[in-house]
Length: 111
Length: 116
Image (tube, rainbow over all chains, first blue to last red; front, side, top):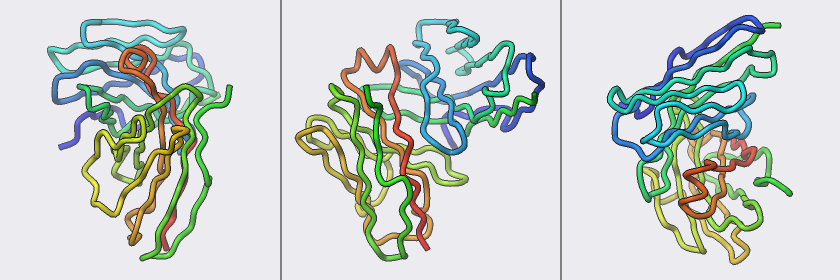
């Protein structure tokens, strides 16, 4: 089965609300990263959290990591229409430099 | 500073043909990573090149190949195209494990390959 599963698969919220996406993975990791993809184009790196960190903030983004549950969550506060995109988590577990991506959450923020 | 550039943006090929696409990383980045994003399969790791050498390969058949040039740009070739090779091919640049572990990877906008 696939390493890195996000839920929900799709999320629709009103502008100004918070959006929470979850990611689960199966093996030990060095770090976990979150990326955004607009309309099937390139990925934009949002935030990286190391395996020895539990929480990290960057602007309106808050990421948590629970290595005992092998899960992470991405919270986007005060969402904007421009946040509409697909969000992917990706795990990096070693020197192979091979990211394993989840299946993604499609976020739609309604104006 | 220019980001990671990929060309062409779109590519339409017939089954059995060969497809070639290019990636130029950010200046100073010596590694290039290729990923395939096929509908329904998500993003999957293809290849990693560093300093001109193939360092790691994902679970793809040998007809997926590539190379890295002395200027660190890279080329991905897909031979004997099959319909299921239709996908968005993304490349990412990077340098050094320390930088990657802090800043993540920098991706290009991708080449969309359609096999008919």
